Image 1 (cartoon, rainbow, N blue to C red):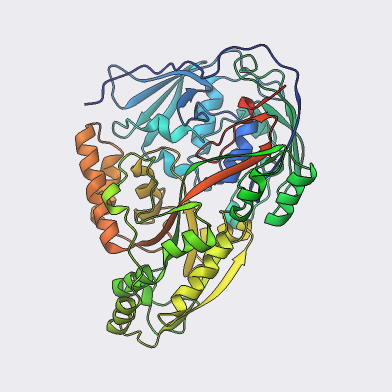
Image 2 (tube, one colour):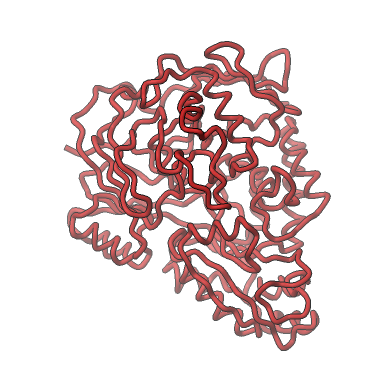
Length: 525
């Protein structure tokens, strides 16, 4: 059984004197979708918001859980359904409001709103309340040993500021809503927003009143973020000196940049898996000429799995910078089913036979939607899939577009067939089942656009979020993975690898969630 433990982690960086600061120019392919901290549960959005806002707890550059706005967190000794968070004293928001427990209560409740894409992380919560100005009690419906893991991207807002600007509720991103919080922010984080031009340029300046300014290097005076969609243009910007740090280096340029004087690469495995999703629940597909829904037939899904050659994609599209996958969860994660993470060898004869058995010997037509600025070589991966599926008679029309359109349309359930990448910030399989496999209902299954619904998987998903016995939880996760693997709900492609390229005077390593915490960055002098 898990025991009640008080968490009061020491900050990973020793107290240091504030060094002379200098600007840093940063680029990646995609901008944050919004500054509203609870509207979108999405990697680049979190990466930007982590510079501006704080969370109660966060994962550092080594993915170790660290104290943020909470200095201690523990299960209440006399009630296993209550987590206690002791809030850091003396913290102010950028506009001067003092942080209290009431801001934390407001933020957690705001993130539970129906418009919030973060609500799936908080489904176990029954009530959030302030015991006093610096103590928050989070009561769950049943014991939840993983609650702190679910809060690493749960940003804290000022209740006063939100009321002042009419943003007590999160932005309705799927409906295209514009609110004051979309382009403006007032956090407690290491940087303040100086200017914001979505998809063009965001300038942040160091928060000299930051509570952690003496605990972290904080060597960046001004953080200038310029998203550049074109891979060639991003690389050219680094080579010309227009930017200092390139996140998500294009795989075709890794070797070249590693040999350029004054530039170096940092590499590591990413906590993310790339895969294909299919609408198997609708009676007919929107974009197909098939009379019925071919994806509803497991034999068709198996045929697709046999035709999509992840090993070839690794070699030709990713140039070796990926790990072909058999499941949609990376090895970092608790409950990872290692024995299932085996790539199914491509077998076109078997795939064609399955298509014929399912009644699709002559194939069918369907549209594949893909982002072109979110994952490493995402559009090229989709182009390879189009070619591979043509060999078994599936004619695929590819629509590749910017991720802001891709995710908004996906959120509205408009896609028959799509590419998605999924990271697991909680480092636990329950997160994957809760978002991607549970029946889409209420706060659960919010990213399950497949129509997949299995009562046993739903039961196991809810149970693994409440079970405190480690062996029992492991058994639940193992059973659930075996069920969904046999059902072929998604088509795994690969676990993504990361490369960041930077000037050689920068001391900064890759973070496996692809979230650079720039308060840790140092300059070599």
